[in-house]
Image (cartoon, rainbow, N blue to C red; front, side):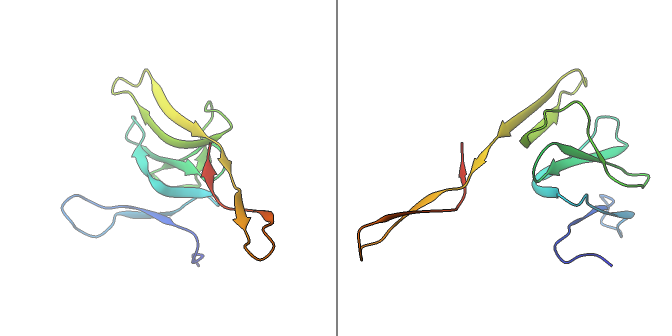
Length: 116
């Protein structure tokens, strides 16, 4: 049974017919910033919520962590058309915010999202 918090991938023909195949994503798979076809046309690549990328073969099987990319959070990525280059953007999330209270004018340190 699929977890309500876990996303699935689907291979859908361009003619609008029924999906050919469904895949469950890796435990920390993140589809929010898109997925990409690998240049070989035999797999789909998507981000991990924490570090790296996942590759899902369209023939089936479990997703595998992509080797050779930095062990950092990757936000965007793409291969060159000739498959000689791989471009990516990295980032670090820092989670902090300041709560200003008018009751005693103190500053309290809390948590939220901010990209660095």
